Length: 214
Image (tube, rainbow, N blue to C red; front, side, top):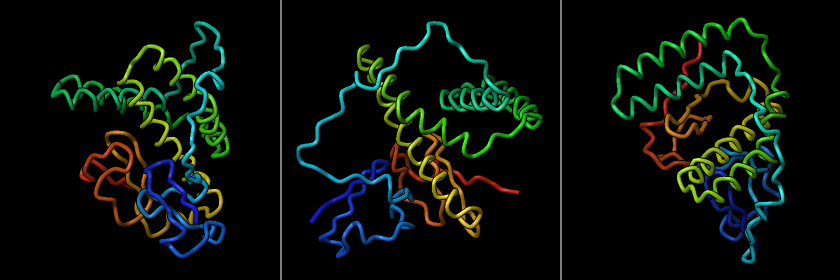
């Protein structure tokens, strides 16, 4: 019998314990802990070897900066506001929050992208960006950056899983249910019963807040 591990939260599906072979598990089945889709699970092997960090590294043009969209600016200042709040710098947090709201209002005038465009960007990050960032952080022995990248990659994978589920189920995925986001790492949970702790960064679920929808 085989075992399959969720790449998001580490939950292990054991065929022997569950009594059902992996290939017989329905395609719509989701991880009971973090809600990830079946396709993010990988078979567990005792002789697993980590991927070569250099294999996916791509050279980037020096100084190739890209201007952020209004939505991107809003997200940036929102994160800075949260960071200041955690450092009890309330005045700076409020100023960053005002900037976030300003750019959020501006973002309403931008043309909306399609979900397929988001999926392309997400898959690009998973295929190359994280590999390159991890290589740079490891070379610099930056443990903090490596930890943040682990969280970031897991969150990106859960977003990719949610996009895949939405593509198949459309609005039915979000009907009569709730959407939650972890304030610490960005983990997204779609469902009614929150896990006791965030599957990614392990904070208590009081830090996972519901996204209010109109």
